[in-house]
Image (cartoon, rainbow, N blue to C red; front, top):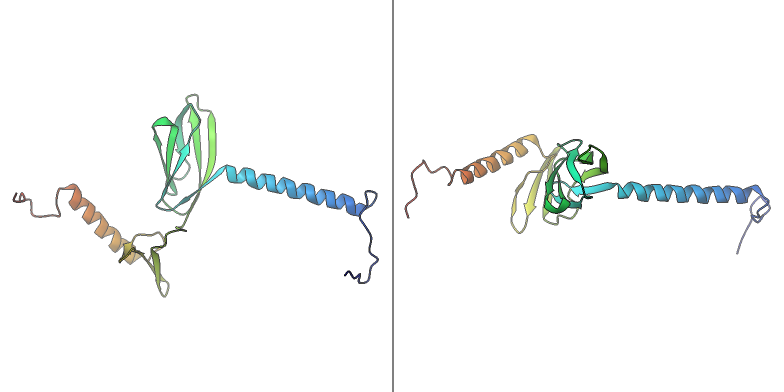
Length: 178
């Protein structure tokens, strides 16, 4: 069933303006879709506190990250690059050959954890705390948490790491009995 309100219905034929506008619309839409696909090919999404692997073209001698507070990169054997998300945001990655020519350029987008089923975020008014609950809930350091909670959790983690590196949880320097 069709109805026409206030105008006479007309078909689009090649001799009328409507056909040209339709063709222009389709052309613009196709150009936009191709541009979006190309932009996605030149970007790499990484979750914060996670790593992604990227195979580099042959001949890469130097890798540059625009903002190392957002992402970090480590070149491995066989042309494999490990990209780690360090802070929320967008930066760029450049791979240069020995002559300084850019052989690869990508946009790196670091996003929040999207698939962590064990992540629980607690809001206390404006303050936020993050926990990893698998199966027991433990504090987790996440950018955007309340400063006091973040600093306390970070301090505990640093103290634990320091104790582990020194060979044993701060036991007064006495050798442990065997």
